[in-house]
Image (cartoon, rainbow, N blue to C red; front, side, top):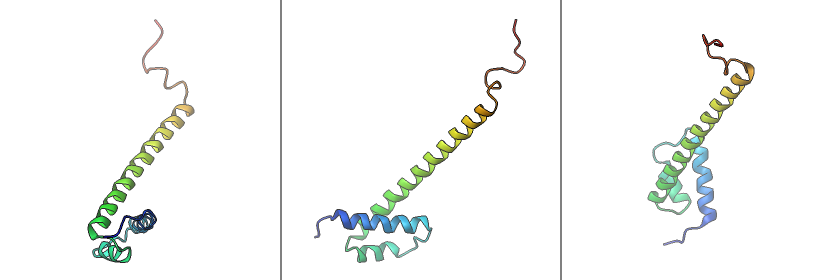
Length: 91
C-alpha cells in the first residue's frame, strides 16, 4: 500500500474543488480520480465529502459577512434611526 503523499493529496483536492465549483462532479468521476491519483475510491470519497463541507462552510461565512456589511451600511446611512425608537418622546 502506498504511503499518503501530501503533494498528491493536494493535487487531488485541487481537482475535486474544480469539479465541485464547476458543478460537474458526476457519477464515476470519483473512481476515475482514484485511478488517476493511485488512491482508494474510499479515500477519494472522503476527500470529496471534506471539500463539500468546506465549501458549504465558506458559503455560510460569506453570507454572514455580507449580512453584517449590509447592516453596518444601513446603520451608517441613517445614524439617528438606530437610536430613536418610534413613538418614544422625552418625558
